[in-house]
Length: 360
Ligand code: SAH
Ligand code: SF4
Image 1 (cartoon, helix red, strand yellow):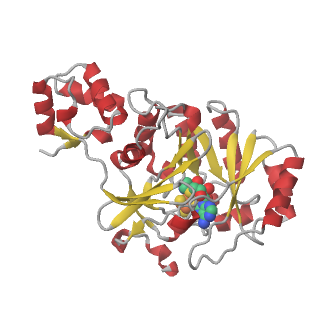
Image 2 (cartoon, protein in one colour; image 1 turned 45 degrees about the horizontal axis):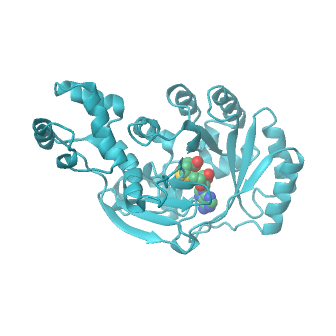
Image 3 (cartoon, protein in one colour; image 1 turned 45 degrees about the vertical axis):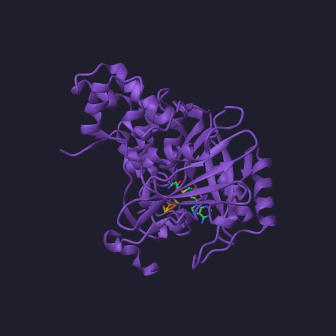
């Protein structure tokens, strides 16, 4: 019999599992608290479970987080973990401490099939989806490694799914992991503090709105279909008018009353004044905030970061039209922990999609 990894279950799944064992539903809550509040991975630690149940669990189930390969700390306090995803592959998780919050940026896939041209993960092609255990295991590890704040406050206050991979292309496993992030018996984060970032998979955006409407960020990156078809190829399937309509529908259930539009600043490509004007026009019916992301270079990307002057001008144009705009600070520069630089390791190339090999 194969061991059941309990990290693959949300509270509903755990409850069903315990029911199968003939146990009461509250056992699921007890075990979840041990795993997620106290970072337990051994049933022997779970002192409020009957000894007979602990023994039964030891034979039938396990708590198996991904294996930690390396850990790095940047000068600005950013930390990065590389976790083993099997077959010589690895995925990365980044912790970004700020004044009043600590944000964990987690990955959802090994590689990504969506092939955005400016993205290092996209350039590597797709290997596989992470399991729920591997997704929630990133929080589990980070929590354990970070330890307790001196004042007892939690260190991870926010989670963003902005690491490697397209979360909505791994919908079922991401949904189960989101349920655990929100559940009080696991991480107990509010829906406002958990953000899914997507390149615009419209049917899955609609599904998320029904299943688990957390905060939504859209990787927009271009103000018209011609340019977006090139930079974010999934735009050919779900063009901008379809995407904007999905954003409006999402807002009916969203925990915040705006969508965050991420916009990467690529010199001479999407950062000109006319692009800002088109953008203002594009989003006129969608309450939103903009997050400008200066492009983070990686070898042979073929792109350059916009100049500070262009970014400033772009930002001012949006602000003059009444928009709230933030410009993302680059964090963890010295450990390659910035957005789009999370390469992890995709060494098992056998299952890579072949259309990406032109970049190799
Ligand atoms: N697949 C999802 C989430 C992961 S990418 C998505 O695309 O939204 C997280 C963010 O980093 C996205 O907005 C993505 O477009 C951006 N990004 C990718 N490569 C980047 C780079 N080289 N520099 C800056 N941001 C980048
Ligand atoms: Fe995939 Fe997001 Fe990178 Fe595009 S930007 S290739 S969707 S990870």
